[in-house]
Image (cartoon, rainbow, N blue to C red; front, side):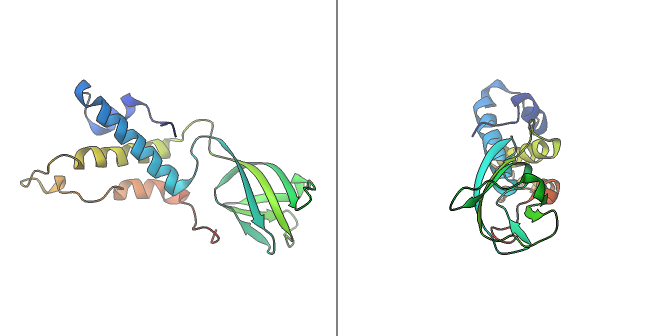
Length: 169
């Protein structure tokens, strides 16, 4: 996966522009971006093809969809009318609130054309946490005694975007 946080932004969050630390900051950026994607799904726009099992008024999806590309029955591949469906958060529902029967293959876009500020901030905070905690702690400064990867501030920033566990959207 390619990182969607630039080096200057991460350096600003971390408070380090030392050229000797550039490789470590790049590693921190990658780790921060990966952790945000793990918790919130795709950040950069990505086409998702997902098989969902019908049998409910709302069907859970793996990711928060941004736009619907197609819905087809499975097996058979009969295309359904997109106007009959809508998203409610991480769920697929019918416009008439009716029952969704049968197994479907959905193609939808998840993510954004540009990384949203909440995702960039969360990734940078995680990157900073990793970058600073990888160093030997200063026993005279309790703030350097860290043992976690995702700081509470990043969790709060991501809170409205965390994916529901699979099947529980």
